[in-house]
Length: 237
Image (cartoon, rainbow, N blue to C red):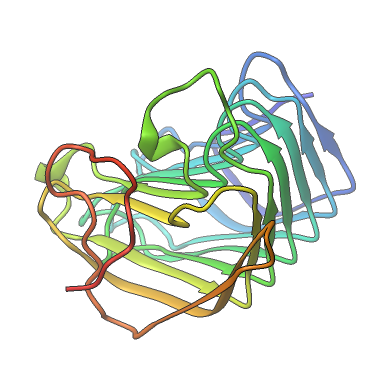
């Protein structure tokens, strides 16, 4: 089953299974500036075997004049998707404010990234992950684009609409990885990134190596201003 949402408010979505071989399990994609995407709760759902993302939130049509966006995905399970588990995109500097939050969610056996963030301005709607876990993500052998083969990917495609990427928070999250690689890849075309907070984030490799990341709020993270390179690493400047 696939759910495509153009406008919705005060809507809980609970206890469902969303699997579709053609597209994403749920797409939240307003079609007009006046559309409203608020007070949405996705609770205790399973997203599986989608050819697209398990959940996609695409806010291109909303502006700063639109109502705040509020979406909560809680206690849900994303599994067996050959592409990205979650895609959040198209929030320019003139986009909406609000909060998109994932709480107590698990992401497992995903072909590409666990979280794919495209063109998300640091000035607008906040994206937050709390008590979430990722295991066996970015495992595809079919795709060779290295930025898609790390757990999280921040990507800037339209620099004319965004001054900086960011406004993302990971809190008490854990990733179980079978590859010795960076947990985050950023392609910012030289714009920079801000308002990214990583609080008590743990990456545990199969050899029991544990890495803990703690980035100060407003710290600039800069990875890929130039063409992609081998073995990307998170670095702060």
